[in-house]
Image (cartoon, rainbow, N blue to C red):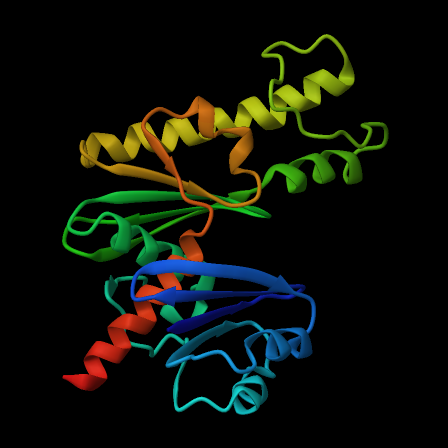
Length: 240
């Protein structure tokens, strides 16, 4: 059984895989919660993706023989063509690998709707071509409130009016319909070059838009799936 750990700034996500099958996942506030959770589990190998410098100490506590710490030097199941690989976020890289795991030998576009909106493009040859970073839903609402004198704090709406009839609904349209137009615009431009491109959405804000994007697959665990594909690739490479 494989264990993959996605250690972010505020939460630690962990998932167990049997080969490519996701068995179980959970989220933790502290490393101690994680170590207690995985204690006495039959774990064969682990991959850690971390923005936290204490990841090596965590691995030491888990006491596992086969450990992969994700970095820009880690072998990947795809070819990374990013011009500055050391600056590429691990979540973006994992999402691209997850797309390749789900749609091997097909071009795919990931739309990760989190704090930022990240677009990741992988071609049919397994080349990660790069992507786009755009402000996310909450970031756009916060920016309008913080950088103006009178615009209020507004919550997102899953069914925002196209033409608002109040300051609140105008702001909701600007953010929600603006993001939707952005998404459709990128899809159209990329589809011109890659007509059979597969679309995948993930991230905490994907539910606002998934029903308004044609032929899209919603894969909430895409990053974890990608991390597991990286771990599996490294295990096979080490055997060969």
